[in-house]
Length: 83
Image 1 (tube, helix red, strand yellow):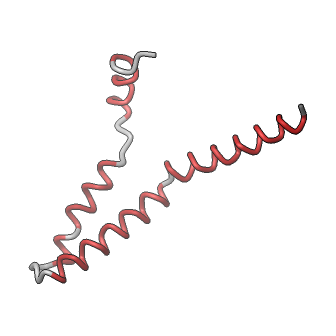
Image 2 (cartoon, one colour):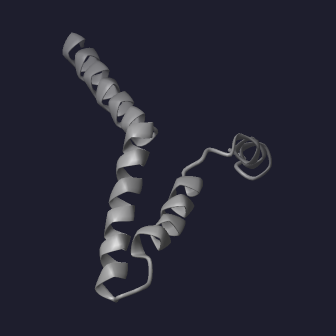
Image 3 (cartoon, helix red, strand yellow):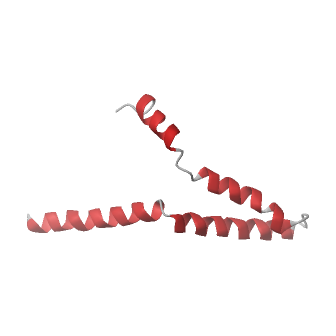
């Protein structure tokens, strides 16, 4: 029984750490940076004008898509997600 409880506690720690990583600003920043770099390389490879500047738009789009938007989340939880 004690072993089962210990395994559950260890699992909970892993789940909490995964959740903390998924919602961390560090993760979002790293993904945004990687997104920017990949898009710059792509735009540069197709000889698009101003690849450093034009890569900002999709990167900002990604950052905006990661925002919580608390009002909409609460609305969705109350009116759409009914369990």
